[in-house]
Image (spheres, one colour):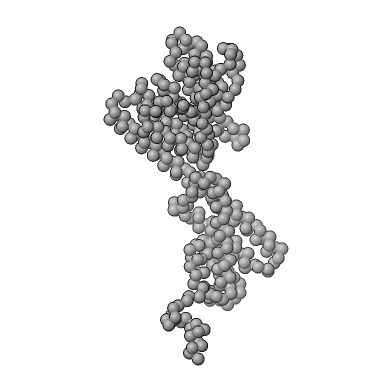
Length: 363
């Protein structure tokens, strides 16, 4: 038995048509002119529309139309007004896009609905493409927002209507080669819709990612400033290096976004993208502190012309910024600070001091 689908949020709601009764029409109250109550599924609306359009002329303008209008009113009361739709002429199938105003946050909520299993039961290729559109609608509702979400869902609804028209006897091509050609063309259009979704999702994920970075960098800077004010002179160079590394990490990501060389896993959702963005300044700050300690302790030499302590601290701040800006450079620099072991019997490289074992043997 077929089920009605409503693509809303990040879930695919399956609704059984068992609520349909009274000779295949949508469930209504007993009074023809009474108040319409209760929720209405898209499956019921499809049944009511098909019953209205296929009824005799003398009934179509009377009771059948009244039943359809009542069912439509119930459906729109639950899901919002229908802004785009396609209805098969020969069988109970259709697609629709509804729009409902939300109170908080105050914006339009678009929902894609599809009921087409009856029309596509002998057309598995069309059904497979419609399932692709179902997935796109779910991802668009979960990941996108604002204008880009609206554009993507409208494109999904338009592509679903075109596909369903290929399965409709009144609109489908008469010859199989023409059908295959039309299906291939619709598949290319769906590829374009999917490409638009990927670009839009990556752009919005980058915004959320940068928001998480900036929030963490500001928090680090504020807390670091408070520590410096309350404990002047204590861990001064460490706090400054932490802030410099966090700022360097933010600048690095912004530069990569500007050069269009930064990709975010957009399907993870906005909260997780914000969380990952917040980790980036922390990682940059940690590398900055480690690099600062390496140079400040004398493990590696900092090539500065001046022996002034202030100039050396300024140089360490620059090094901390570079560590946050380029994590690879920071990792390579830390790797050079480690002792390089060499095999037994192998002479050390020029300029490298001999090991303790070799020195004792020489003595």
